[in-house]
Length: 146
Image (cartoon, rainbow, N blue to C red; front, side, top):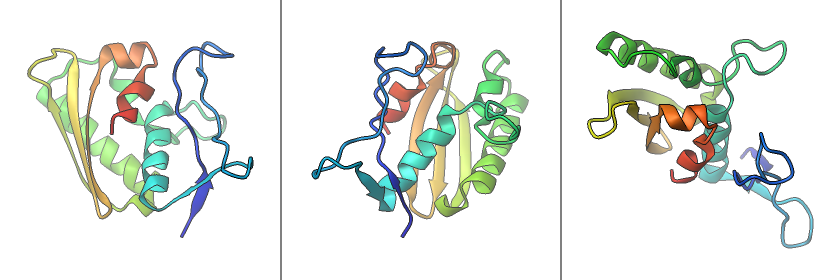
């Protein structure tokens, strides 16, 4: 079973203003805490969703495509394109998640938001993303609720 260092995903302004107070979590023995199982997969999904595509040097295809749709109109064709690109990215970058399908729909209560459902062999994740979250880099708060 794969493991990784556990992250706290704190987005409050801390030592730096762009990354907040996020850090690795201390374990019981004052060593870095490890994470595995479904919590490990969820952490990998959160990290994927928080990295804009092209932000990693020499890896232009690494990261999440949602950021590139920030200022696009939410037409039916754009939602289909977003769904297909997100499905492709998840299957390629996170094969251990076992993503089977992605559904993207316009949120009826919030004009600039979309509801996204990711179905995988390990479970379903449903969340809502709006333009303000992307503009404020406030996605950590959104993904902490999933």
